[in-house]
Image (tube, rainbow, N blue to C red):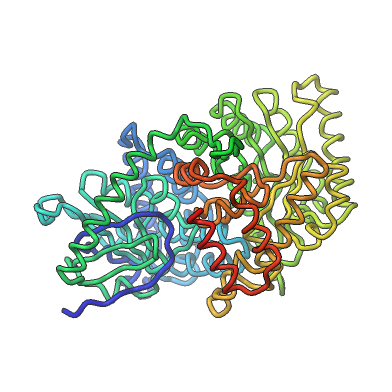
Length: 583
C-alpha cells in the first residue's frame, strides 16, 4: 500500500505511532421501513428499552471511572445522561414512530438530523460543536437497537511489540473513550470535530495526540493500517515507510523526555529571566474543570464559560437553570480554586446560539441579539445570573466578565443591573463580596477603538482574540472557503492588541488575553513583549507556555516588538516572529 498524508485540525500536542482501529458509525447501517399499525406500540417500547439500556451503560461507565481519569470525562458523561433524558431525545422520536409509522432507528435518526441542522446555525465554535454530544448519544442508542454495541477491541488483538492503537472514527464520544481505558491506545483521528469538540477537549486533558476534521479519514484508512499522528502539524501519515516510522520514533522519545521536565514546573512561578511575573490562568467550561486547572498549576480561572448551564434546554422560562442551580455551579468552581480568583463570563447566548432551538433562523446571527445585547433584552434572566455569581463570591474571589460590549449604554446598564442584584441580596441578607471586580470582553473592534469609556468605568479588560479576529477580518471561522484568511498576526489585529494593552497600562487596570492566542506558544514572546501580563488558556497548555516564559527576557524583545508593530507586511512579521523565538 502506498503511503499518503491527510491534513486536519490539530487539537493537542504530540506524536503517536500505531495501528488503526476503525469505529464504524451505527447510523450508516440504519434501516428505513414503515411499521404496521398494530406493531406501533411494540416499536415504541423497543426504543424505550434501548434508551434505558444506554442510560444504564453510562451509569456503569461513570461508576467505573478510575481515580486518575480527567474530570472532563465525568462531566461529559453527565452531559450525555442529561441529553438522553431530554424530551428532544426521549419523547420526540416516540412521537415520530406513532405519527409517521417509522421504525425506531429511522425515527431517532430523523429527530437527530433535525436537531443537528439547528445546531449548525449557531455561530460560536464551542457551542456549535455541542451538536456532537447529541449525535454521540444517538449513536449509542442506535448501536443497542442494531445489536452493534460491542465493537471495541481487546488488547490481545493488538500487535504486542507495538501495543498502541490509534482510534479512527467519524467522531468519538467521551463514553467510548472510557471504554478504551483497558486497551492500549495512542491517539484519535476523526472525520468531524474542531478545536472545541469533546474529542479535542478530552485529548488535551489526557495529553493524547489527536487530529480532527479530516473529512473522510475513516473511509480512506483501513483496519490495522500503520498510522503516524503528528498533532503539532495536524497531519496523519497513513502507511508510512520504515524510514519515516524510525524518524518519528526518535522524535517521540525526545518529546516524552521533554514532557517529564515540563511536569516539574507545576509549582514554579511564571517569571521571566528579567524578573517579570506573568499570571497564567485556565479557561474552563464546567465547575469540575477547576480541579484540572489546580492540578496544572493555574493561578486562577481567567474564563469560566457559563453557557453550559443554559444549553440543551427548550428555552421555556421554567426550564432555564434556576438561581440556585447556577449558584451551586459557580460556588463549586470557586471552592475548587482554593482562594484563587475565578472570572465568570456572563451568559453569551443569543441569536447565534439560541436557548430555544425552535427559534427562527437569523440572517446574520453573529451580528444579532447575542451576549450582552441578549442579556439586556432579558433583564430578569440576567439578574438571576448576576445574583448567583454574586452569591458565589462569598466563598472566594470572583470577577464578573461581560461579553461583546461596544456601547457606553451597555456598560452603564450592566453596572446598574449589578447594583440592582446587590441591593436585592442585601435586602434578603444574602452574603456576597460587595467589591467584586467587573470587566469587559474586548472582542468587537469598536470596543478596542473606544477604550477610554471602558477603562474609566470598569476594573479590568479581557481580550477574546477568537471573536476579535473574526469580526475585524470579516471572516466566518466555520466557513471553510474563507478559513484560510483567519490570521492572528494580521497587522490590524496586532494594532488592536497593542492599543488595548497600552490603554490598560495607562489606566492601571489589568488586561488579559483569554482567546486562542494565549495558548499558542509561538506567540507567547510576542504577547508578553507587548505588555500582556495575564494569559488564560486550556489547563493542559499551561506547562509549555510557562516554560516559554521562563526562557524569555522581555527586555531583549523590545526592539523587535517595535519593528513588528510598525510593520504591515505579513511575511516580514512572520520573519520577525521567527527571530523572537531565537532571542
